[in-house]
Image 1 (cartoon, helix red, strand yellow):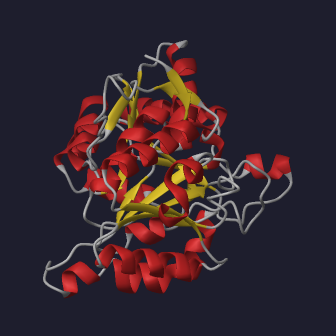
Image 2 (cartoon, rainbow, N blue to C red):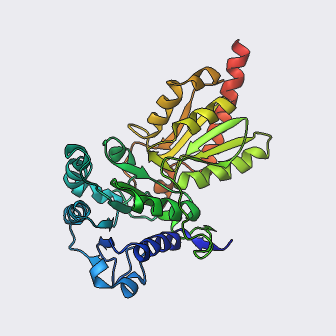
Image 3 (cartoon, rainbow, N blue to C red):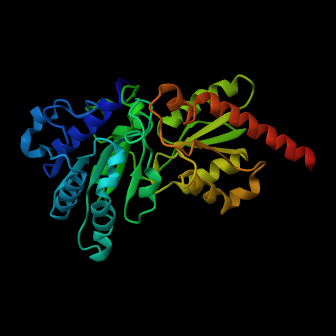
Length: 338
C-alpha cells in the first residue's frame, strides 16, 4: 500500500467526494488560490472552479452560517475554519442553528455539513491559535465530533463525514499534517469509508490500556514501544470519533487489561477524558479494574509561545511512559494492601 501524508489524505477525500457528488462544495478563508493555511487544498480550485471552491470573507460567523444555510437547502458543504480556536466566533451558527435545526423541524430536513479545522499546539502559534476545544462541541446534542490520528483514518473518516446527514466537526491536529501513513490507492478502494462511531485498536496488549485520539495516539504508541522493552504489554485504543463514541470498545479494553490511562492534549478540567472515565466507571468494566483510572492531559494554562514552555504543557511520549509506570506501580500497591 502506498504512503501519503495526512494532509494529502484529507485533500483526496474532499476531491473524491466532490467528483462523486456535485452537491459537495468547499468554502473557507484562503482555501482557493492560496491552497489553505496549511496547504491542504492546493490544486482544488484549479480542478473544481470558483463555484465549488469559494474563498470567503474573514468571518467565521459568515462561513459557518453560510455553510449551514447551504446544507439546509440541499448542498453538502465542507467548511474550513483556519484555526479551531475560531469556532468561538461561530458558536451561535453552529450550536443554536446547525446542531438544532433537524430536531426542531422533526427530522424533515438534514444538515449535511462538515466543518474541518486545524487544532492543537506545537507550531509556536501561541495561546489564541493552539487550543484543543473539542470538549466544547462534544457537549452539544446534534453535533458529531471526529479527530483522526493517521492518514488512513483521516481519509476514511472524512469521506464518511461528508456523506453523513448531520453536522460533523472534523478536527485535524496540526503536527499530523506532514506525517505519512498507508492509504489505499483510490482505484483499488474507491469507497475507503470508516464508519463514524467505531474505535480502533492501534496496538493490542493485555497489561495496560492507553485510550487516546489525534496526535496523542502517536505519542502513546511511542510510549507503548518503550514499555514493551521492560515487559509491559500495552494496548493503545484510538477512539477516533468522540461523538458518537464507541463505548463498547472502551469498556471491552478496560475489562481486558484492568488498568486504564487516558491521554489527550486538551486541558484536564472539563476535558473529554472525563467522559471516558465515566463510561468505564458506569459499566461492568469498573469491577475489572486493578487500579484507579488515570488521566494525563494538557495543563490548565493557555498555550505559551515559547517553544520549551509550549512542549511542556501538553503530554509527551516520555510523560505517557512515566504515567503508565505509575499506574502499574499503583496496581502492585493495591494488590499488596489486599
